[in-house]
Image (cartoon, rainbow, N blue to C red; front, side, top):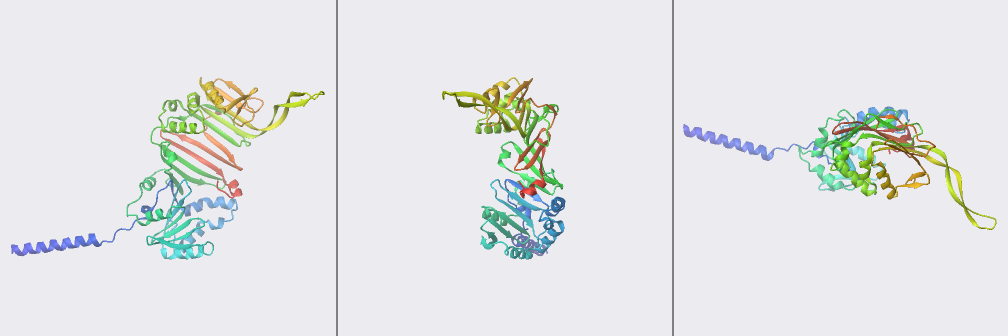
Length: 442
């Protein structure tokens, strides 16, 4: 009896082992998710195309943009269903500083996508090829590529397609790249329709461990909200009471900065301080002397033209044909410049350094910064002003930190909205009407 039971147990154990090994050896591996396939890059992003279409359609309709009817929620949803794209899911984007970029989207029905490719062939020359038994389509003229699998589609434009394709097709389940894992776990901009996360080396060099940007817009302006987080403390903060110039409609360019930099000045090993030194060295700017003298206020305004008297020397001939030099004056139109900077007792030393390097030079009773018009200078306490008008501009109370910059007719506005010990929140505004008139985004 004991012998029969032992034999039965042995057979049962052997059968269980066979079944266990069968499951291990023949079990179909779990396919990777689309997020497991995503390549990393300097900038990675998520976009909900349908929600983005809802948000931006009013802007496109108001400005009567030609393609507005092709970017509506209903049209895009219909096109997605027609060609097997699941646009209710996020589209994932990735791009590098060098201009190479790509996107991946979820497929609801991969059998429909060939219909979209055949339709594209009517407008664009498309060829097909394969790499490691993976078929793809391409257009050599603009170096664009398309590949799709059972549940995903990849679009790429750039010079590294083969390495991107290999990463996508060899991905493993739960093998999401650490950059995407960290990005998707972020709480900032969780409900935004377009969110960009940066791995850019130039931001990393500044000690920025997290950099994120989110899209926001209405019918009149495009807004890019920004969030920066530094691993080590930010050794500066916003000033509460400061002086500045008032902006006006004629202001073309304005830099308005008001920061408490006392702690920053003492932390010379900070990553931002080190990077400023490198930038200063590159342009031969005396950054050490600047930081030593600067007390945190800096304002520059350019806007419009003004008529000023400019002296010049003219050589004339007298009755005996002898040359004589005569000092004369003429009216000239120059850009209206005003600049203000607050400096401590080391301010004059900094200005002397600029003069030694030829960045600032004295011209008669005035001064010139590089190629600027002739500027007058005044000093009141710790405030230095340089201006092209007849008298020094009026200073008004301010606590803003922002930049207004006009380029090719488009006026951009960037502001630092708040600063904490480790974080900076800011925003960039671009007027969409002017952008659409130029038919360019930047």
